[in-house]
Length: 175
Image 1 (tube, helix red, strand yellow):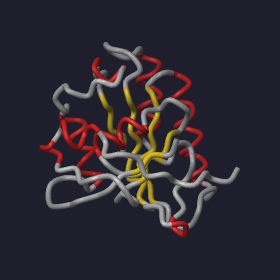
Image 2: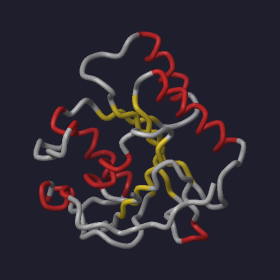
Image 3: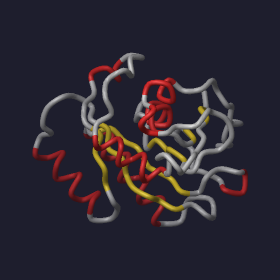
Image 4: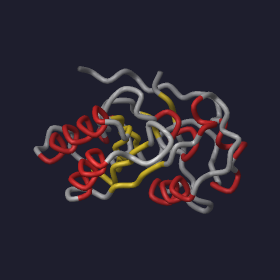
């Protein structure tokens, strides 16, 4: 399936609300690409808050100007973790454009509270093949409100993405 053309959007809300992340204005390609293992994984929100290019469910294609460094995103429910496993399998078997480098898998909480044991077991399997970072449940992110403080886990993602002060990056959104 061909990838839709990237469209730069307005400056993300995160740039104004989270100056401590040092986010630059929107436009162009970011230092990282956010790739969803499934629809609704959270790539748009993470690209908005952290920075980088939201590629939806498409592999980055460095030949097309995408950042080859990618963060694979999935929710912590069963279907999300299975989708992350399938995406990692595709990466391992080379089913991606040349120049793609997985930085980490980012698991976004699908609900508040602790995960059931069987889901934690799936996460352990993911950790055996890739670096995994978990983003906690953030109630304000359910809607468009991004005014809550940035959790440490998200600040760590900003460091991985290269969007900390002194390391400017840009982000764009695929609609």
